[in-house]
Structures are given as C-alpha cells and as structure tokens.
Image 1 (cartoon, helix red, strand yellow):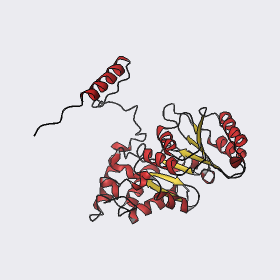
Image 2 (tube, rainbow, N blue to C red; image 1 turned 45 degrees about the vertical axis):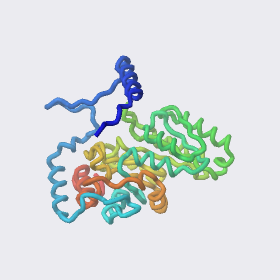
Image 3 (tube, rainbow, N blue to C red; image 1 turned 180 degrees about the vertical axis):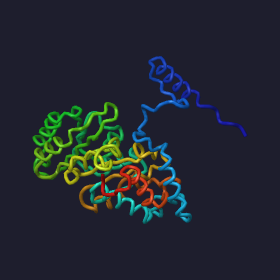
Image 4 (cartoon, rainbow, N blue to C red; image 1 turned 120 degrees about the horizontal axis):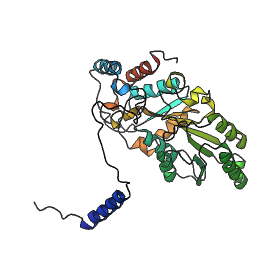
Amino acid sequence: MNSLPKPQPLLETFRSILQRRQAASTLRTLSLASPGSTDFSSNDFLSLSTSPNLRTLFLQALHASPALPLGSGGSRLLDGNSSDAEKLERDIAAFHNAEAGLLFNSGYDANSGFFACVPQRADVVVYDELVHASVREGVRLSRCGRSVQFVHNCVQGLREVLEECVAGDEAVRRGKRNVFVAVESVYSMDGDLAPLGEIVDCLEEMLPMGNGCLIVDEAHATGVLGPGGRGRVCELGLEARVFARLHTFGKALACSGGMYSLYIYLLFVGDRAVADGKVGQSNSTVRHSHEGVSGKLCKAADLYDVYVFSVTGGDKGGV
C-alpha cells in the first residue's frame, strides 16, 4: 500500500514554531522525576497518591463489588447513568452543605461546561484576571452579552466593574439580567486566597435584586482547607451565599489524570432543578462517557467513603 505524502508545508510551519520557542526558552517538554526525589511541585498536597492505607481501602472497595461494570457504556443522557453516580452526587453535595451536585469528567470540563451553558443571552460574566483558563474557555463558548475582568483579588476593582454594569444596563439594575462573578478560592500560581467574604458582601450590595451569582473554583482548596477539607466556602460559612462551587478529586485527593476524572464535580447551591436541567444542556456532560474504571468505580458511593476516611479520619460530619 502506498503511503500518503507527508504534509510538508504543515511540518515546516511546526518546525519553525518549535525553533522560535526553543530560541526564546519557551519550548516545553515532558520529563520524569528522578527516583528518590522529593516532590515540591505537584498537586498531591496530602501525599495520598502514595498512601498504602488509601490503596488498601480502594482495592477492598473494588473487590467488594465483583459484578460492577468497569465502564459506563455511554453518556449519562443515553445509557451511561447509574444509581451509583446519582448517589455520589447526593452524598458529595451533602458533605459540602449544598443542595445538589453534578458530576463531570474533569475540572476543566466542569468549568468550561458550566460557563458555556449557565449564563444566558445578554448576561454578564465578571472574572478575576488570574482565573483559570477553563473559565475563560467556557465564557468564550457562552451566550453571555459581555465579559470583563477585574484586578486580581481587588474588591475595589470588582466594585468598579459592577458599578459600570449597573449604571450602563437597566436590565441589570432592575434585576432582570444576571451578573456572574468567577473567582478561585486559592490561586495556585501564587498561593494567595480570595477575599471571599468581602467579595460576597460587595456583590450583594451592588446587586440587591439577587441577580448576582458568585462561582468559586475550589480546586486547590479541596481536601486542604475548611472542616474535613470541604474548602474555603464552608470554612467561612458562605455556602448559602455562593451560587456554585467547583471541587476536584484530581489534586489533594490523589485521583490524578483522566482515569478518575468522574470524581470531579460541580456543586450547585440553589434549586435542584438547576443541576437536573444542566445535565441536558452542558456539552461536557452530554458528550462524555465516564472513562474506564472511573465509570462506576467501587460503587461510586463506596469510593466516596474512602475519600471521607482519608481526609477526615472516618467522620463524615467533619473534624
């Protein structure tokens, strides 16, 4: 069989790009940690990825369910849903004092899917200038009327942006158009904390009609901050004042990579119908099957019990 000719113009373009990056010291390559090295850079904050206790609990939960399918078989809207996934959503939501939860395959999918479908036509999205790229990607795909950033962790900067939104948009002023504010509770690059209490106060003051919705990405706070690792929102008692939170199992909870990506979830504080409705509207939920073992691993609820044990020492009520 004759092979197809190589796309030389494309290859030359790539070579040129790579050469420019190498010359500018911006060429990134994969590497492996040396044996015996000390980890100062990963997101395995609690060292659970190498915990023999967690490994034992995991295997026990897996062997306790020999009939458990290792794959979902399809997206949840078709035939990939399960009672295990629904129970996991309920359990995790309860653990974080939220009314509902929605599973995604990854934190990136959760953020991009949320912002792509929740803001409605002509709504406004305001975000911290250092917010994660997944939020920006979701905003780019959304139907929102406009998006604007504010100075990192600057409540006064947020206030100025909100003042402009209120002054320039009668629908926002009357509470007929929503304003979504996106922040992270812990910013991974600098390790600084968002002033969540002040942000909530500012949002409620500037939008007293209730059309301000705060979304907090708790990816780097999960398992580390708050009672039982519940995150900053729970630590500050702001659960009822934050519209949605993102928590991930891909960092402190040691389920790295796509294998365990089911255990990344979006928490909605509000009407259960919001979570139910968005299952059918978010492309990141519709298009993905839960991959491999992550489909219904160890009966999802059982693995959640392992997670709670690992973080809180077995007390589901907190520490």
